[in-house]
Image (cartoon, rainbow, N blue to C red):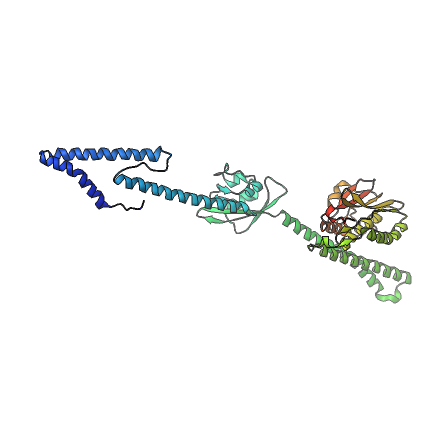
Length: 432
């Protein structure tokens, strides 16, 4: 409405309305009755438009106001303008609230808003996934009743939120959730939770890795230190014992060198690589080279070593593929007892290229299979066994295959041998 309401205009309209009643009353000497009739008609008129306003506000679904003359047009139009303004504000607030919720849902962390008495106000979908909440059904319920964990209950009741709290997910035991609480507004708090399962696993792996490396290096160093102390007075050491000491120290130093080289190789493989498709690897030539290098090891153990190689070339990293194939073959030779059989195959399966090493060794229990590619993991707990390696071979295989969009598969049964194999995807197989 563009015009402004004027008290003078309203007073002028009132005078103009009453003027005929006043003149008639003065002419016929009925001034007060005429004025009373005029005011009564005015009251009835105002009451009528008041009823129309009430019906429009409470019963009508039409946003447009009814037409009205005089001062009621100001009232109707003013209410209509305020309603339109409120409607625009509600829409703006709804858009703002929708964007806030969309942003909250896009957060990588779970978010919960609750009152100081612990009652739930709002939660995003990730919080519902972590804690089993239901929104909005659980609104108003206490968090301690929804997230049932003794540590969380004590943490919430204590009211001291300077430190974070880590608890298992109440609905998913495999998840560890770190919780932080901070003031949100007057009488309200914001709970932010994130999945730290992988962080804890990595920390455990880091500690295990340091402990294993320390053990792997400590063992040969202890042996070498013992022999060096024995050779401190070389003149009093028998020649045969001195020769044995030198041989053992050479073996232990070679073991440490191999361990360091494999750790460095693993470190290089963990660096992201994006040029797998740029190099052609002549796998048959690599396997021919590998066959020549391992035949002596196989003869020393009287093993029957068979190669079945098809002329298939692939795109990839030659060093990594050679390392993966070499580790699988050397492991088979190491763990297959004397007189056993080992078969190496490289052939096409549909459009993919498959490499496999099958042996007639003792086989592996199912409980060990998921952990074989972990660093320093051994089926044989004796780290000093003659057949044991560094425990890094299959970890190297795993890393090498990940760079080629592949993974290691293991089929093994106790007493029935083992088969280690992987397939390179069709996009890495070079067409002739």
